[in-house]
Amino acid sequence: MIKAGVMAAVLFVMTQVGFIVKNATVASGVAVAGVAMLLYTPLAYTTDKWAYHRDQRRRARVNG
Image (cartoon, rainbow, N blue to C red; front, top):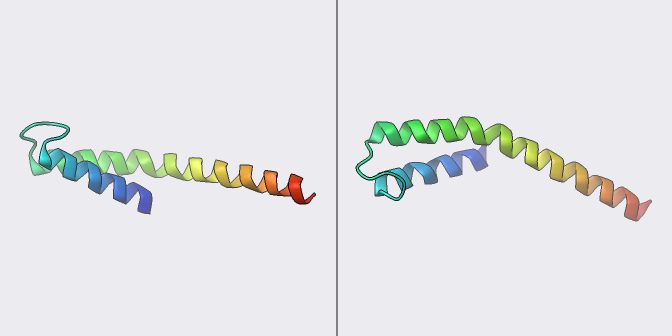
């Protein structure tokens, strides 16, 4: 959730500065950040889990 929170905060700042949408409201920035958090949390978990298991398999072959 930390990764998702950081990315949601970055997206919020980007909406408020105007990198993504010009003249975005705070509410729309919060909405974008919330949706990003909901989507990115399971995606980051799945990716990290896959990388961890891949590394464990590689270590088992090397130490084998």
